[in-house]
Length: 454
Image (cartoon, rainbow, N blue to C red; front, side, top):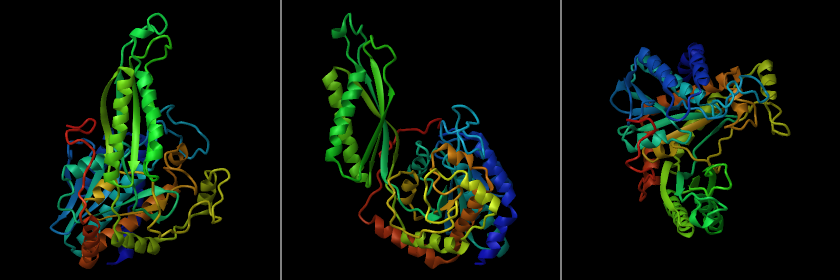
């Protein structure tokens, strides 16, 4: 494989993909609403000669773009969803929403989906010129931010026949990523009986009391769960603004996380028992839980990590102009003391054992096939994802360079998996050994349909 020839294909078409990424940034569509973003990418991939399958697993904003035939089959994973309430004017280093209360790409998925698509297109061109057999697929995956698009893809068999998958994620550092813990997000709705809170309080049954008692019960549960587990909540319906009315309905949203799927199922059941107890104590009824999303824990794969590390080392360092360094410095958080002098990460962490306490639906894919992922710097060092500062930098030349660099790593990794059988077989053997005795179980109900799905 001629890496430089492959990467030259990415450099040649860079401007086209920058335009696509910037357009998706402007669309800023959230969970299962990525209609314009998906349409733009789908039409582009069709024009590039890919065969299109859409919708996929009942999701209108999912599609698969495929090229080639036969084995092996390598997948490129992309995402396009934005986050609510993270709108921000581009390149402005102070809070200034582009649309007040609007959405924004605060996790860089405009870059993620476009960069994975960019890698797939480069590999297709290389396969054509070199006569390389095999199949590549780009998956436009909706709703990573809370909707679990890849869970529906995994449960629906969309990855059957795929040998391995590669992807990346924008961030403020250059590193590999192989972690993620299991989580379930669920809504608990209580129904009581309205009454005048002073005139006839004995006739009322407060749903808000039930929510508060549930929260109190969960607080006591924290002492008796694994130290690595996490529980978060938000009261999404407090029953109204009138204190002189007994609240007849109230709702609370919970996120429960554990390192392993099996532990998650047990802990979530205990949370549900607390909800039942709260309803019993208050004379209310408890509907649910309504599971919003559920992600598995990530299955790492050493050979896939090694593959990403190899090409990250070959690709780095990314070169920046002084103007780009000055730009990034404007966004470095106050008080941040980076080890390096550069306001953009110029190094590379090849550690495989970094503990990640976040959750992603990529994990459900990792139970099905070997998965490799890298992160590249697309913003000033110390910039946190899911903030307006990330949104602000999402159309910059720094972000574009991070995207192109990731596309090069992902493309090279995919091409090696296509052309070096030993590399792919090592990944598959490692994956099989890690799954020995373990069965994939998703807490996402089998009858649950994606929002807006068919």
